[in-house]
Image 1 (cartoon, helix red, strand yellow):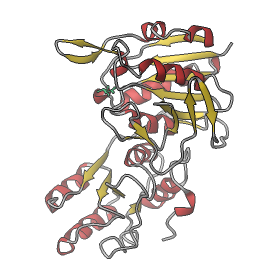
Image 2 (cartoon, protein in one colour; image 1 turned 120 degrees about the vertical axis):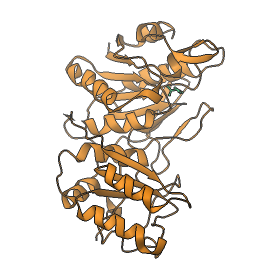
Image 3 (cartoon, rainbow, N blue to C red; image 1 turned 120 degrees about the horizontal axis):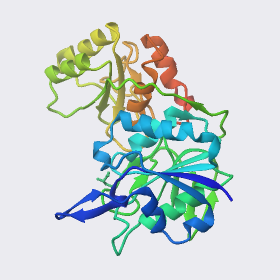
Length: 333
Ligand code: ASP
């Protein structure tokens, strides 16, 4: 019988109503007991390193989950992490960079409705996740939600209420679980597992609006070691008489790292198309292409402590980790 480590962290899946609003209170052991048949499928050890609405998750919590898995990696065949859905895509990206090329499945799941509610996706998502964690066909960090198996570096929460809350906009689903039956379409090949334990949290995200001014851009550039700018469409910087481009160029010359992504869900950036974007890579802006903003942010946190200058950061950024970016779209500039 397979041995699975189950890590509860809170979220809606473990929430109950108290004083008219939801907060997580059900522990990992109790969650398992509430899903009939799980104990017949595999041997489960349940742990609860913390209990939070995922709104309160920080980089420390990512490292804590990763350490929990690392410390017990040899003792289990697979891992299931139950997590709040709101920041689940960040945690999925974080675990993908902190635990690379895992030969064993590391499944992250959650739910849109608490396990105790009459209509809830909690039990199905948990059951599906354990099926995946027990599978010999799956490996690496995956999100199992609403009957779909998605790659950890590619997921985004795209619906705030429906049961099918997650998608991987620029990457196909790895598989499906329907009526307890797992179908694996493919699962990217892995090497030998590696763990990392250093993250630099000084990475900011600036969402451009038509009203964003130079003062805000300059503040964000000075505040963080790396800045992800969420631009419009295929990507570009507002002209503003050349002031934005000048501020970004100066920041990069001073050693800051700047990545440009887009607010558009699917298909990614192509900075070379419009005048507002062309030439940005020549001044050192790194283009996100098909990567999710979540993966961009966490990848920077992971690579800042190990790549000291902008050339090596750019090189590392474009080196695919857990299929986070399509290599053929790498910038040649
Ligand atoms: N606010 C909750 C959380 O992220 C939402 C959920 O789990 O669905 O913890």
